[in-house]
Image (cartoon, rainbow, N blue to C red; front, side, top):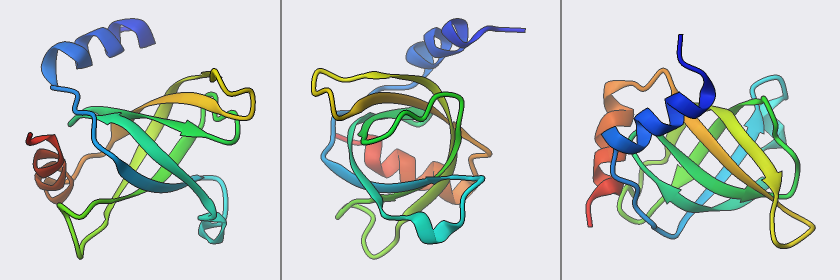
Length: 118
């Protein structure tokens, strides 16, 4: 069984990371979806996961993500992800988050392929 670092390294080899200004909203899958009031900005995204900033520490959380992009409009990418890393950002009020997508559906794969294009 691979540990988190090996999983991340494997992801980096398989998927191209794209820096794209995407807006997201998220909540823990343990929370009520009415808590979709935690907005953020994606730092980079690939078919395997994403990096973003968050106003809270999300260590070891499973998240429900909603990713918005003009490239997908009017659709919104809704996908689950597990947080692999949550560390304080350069700005003390935020955390740098790295997360891996879970249970990627065919529709999610199509949307992610659109977001990966240059």
